[in-house]
Image (cartoon, rainbow, N blue to C red; front, side, top):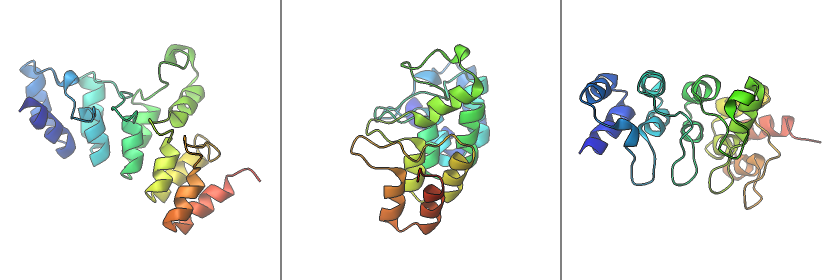
Amino acid sequence: MVVDRTLQAARQGDVQTLKVQLAENVPISEVKDLLGATPVHHAARAGKLTCLRFLVEEAGLPGNCLAKNGASPAHDAAATGNLACMQWLITQGGCHATSEAPKPSKLTIMSRLRFVLQDRDSSGATVLHLASRFSHHEITDWLLKSGEGDPSVATDTGALPVHYAAAKGDLSSLRLLLGHSPK
């Protein structure tokens, strides 16, 4: 019941319910759905930036937690087209390197961003792969223009972001990706 209420509040951006739960000492940091997604994942998917910020900044939930499929909240925001949430997670929300990378305190901001955007889910997909796969050109554009999305990174099966855009017939994303691909 607590799990359902917490995840629903995150999806709906219901910060008040989450504040009440925290005041009642409900362990929202331990709440996960069956796939291991946290309230941070759910807020990022739903595009609830105010709630996302509350969960990370005030409730203390990590912005870089991984679901069972290896996806971070930034992956979820990219897959669902929530640019503002993805940008915030990457630039301010603590969505940084995984445990294999150097400690975040030793990274420059640009290095930290590079690790985030090259982090891969369990299939090897980066945030750019997901933005391309689901035809979110505004996210693809931001990732490429910021210099943080690498269109030459392949998934475990060898798929590049350009392959996803081509398969969808997404000419806008395809043009963006080809414009940033090595010649």
